[in-house]
Image 1: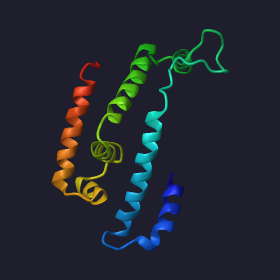
Image 2: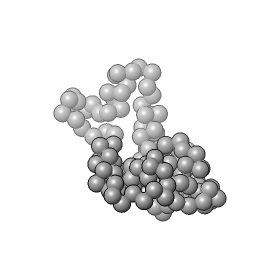
Image 3: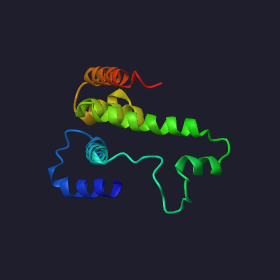
Image 4: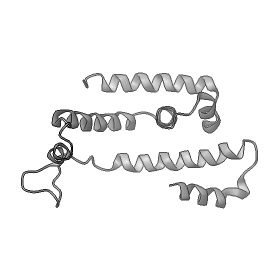
Length: 146
């Protein structure tokens, strides 16, 4: 993905107007590519943690392998974690593109409000508002999960 971002930036260099810093401009290209990638990934079917693999013996599944590799792994916790990842992925997919972007930039990338506002070309207040509503929506979507 990094290589794609640099190729896209190189091809788009004549259109760089200098209104923002070069860092912000290229970071925006990378963010857009990441968002596009996530959209494609979210459309793919969710893989079941109990899917059979050619390396597995009869009746063995991913949870059994995890437990064999590390005796401290609780199969219940492993399944619960996998379910949480699936539910979280589905919940994030239901957010609007702007809300999804601020959540990903803040929570996954760890960017500041100022950095996000530069990347998304909006005010810091707008970033804070979008983040608030995105978190609220995620809480609503995930409220039944314990």
